Length: 155
Image (cartoon, rainbow, N blue to C red; front, top):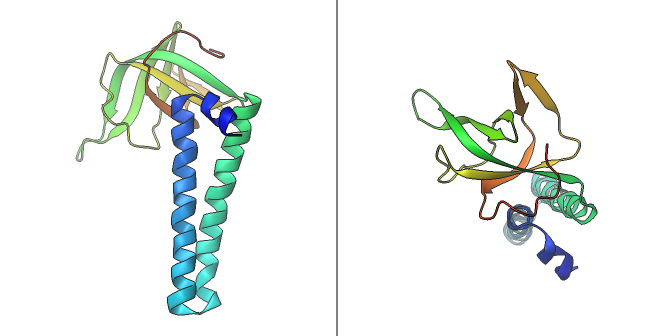
């Protein structure tokens, strides 16, 4: 099982480990509540959150084992930022002749215009076309592309 995990792309490994670390925090919260509170009514939210992250990690692991994800390589052309706090609202990426807009759900780190990016999304992800641009909302993970060869599947 560890060999399969090591064969996954680095960004997907990081995402699975993030889910598992949130699960570990939930388990620690359950233990703390059992030791100090002793009331079972307080355990319900922690159990639900822990189960959510555990199922998320399991589903992502299965998706990676079965290869049910798409890998897209592209170049960041434009970054939309919010007016007040200057947070990133959207990334515009040029990939294989298509203009793609993604709505980030995670911190983008140090993504700048002109960076080569790699996107991982589920094979069942919804793709919308707005003004001759593909819009992706359900991106599993994305980051800077260290090597542009060896893609699994592309648009």
